[in-house]
Length: 292
Picture 1 (tube, rainbow, N blue to C red):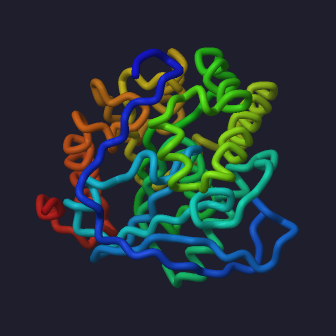
Picture 2 (cartoon, rainbow, N blue to C red):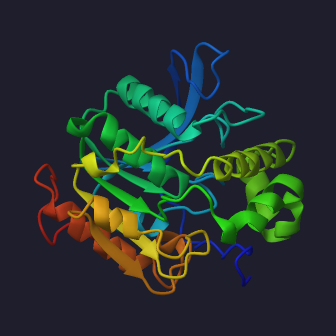
């Protein structure tokens, strides 16, 4: 698949040794009328916890198989409300990234996870950054991959309209994977909801995902970004460089929208992430010893 509205193939490795669980939280602003809410999450590995926050198509489309296979970490992978094995929703609420951050905090509290490292992809990268701004003492570091900074994305307009109006047009390979994760009778609902949410985000370009507080971000930050990410506007990362000058930015040639799951770049990303983890003062992984 090629072009700005085509979706690159996800990387297929041997299945990771993760187990699935359910955990109840008292409520989620993603589904405010339901109390309590039972969220599905995956958990496995060893070492200090790393929480993986998926993008708008769910975790299964862009899995972190290479990193899970090689890094000495405990991986916790929640399905946000609306995705995978968590409760279904018809619409994403306004400011859904903030709502998802609050839900994530509640889940980590329920799981007894104190300090952790966050690795967010796409929408998950926005959520990770919001989490770090809300409670910087809670996180040893954040990895943001394919982060969104601009709200109005002209190059992605047709992509979001296709999500809204004709998600089957992404092709059988894509739709089969989405159906396998979210359910044959439901996957179109959440994909259309995501398209509508991003259409509405584009209508409010002067608002800000980070409430104009990005310059306050002080948790150690690694930015991983595909040099040819079709969801990124020209110059979009300049804001990150300007407002978070301490962030380490790694541009991945050929990485597309998901360098961590692209066959050609996954190993490179894992090595970069391992080096970042070793640099963190709160990391339990010795320098140079994190990749198996």
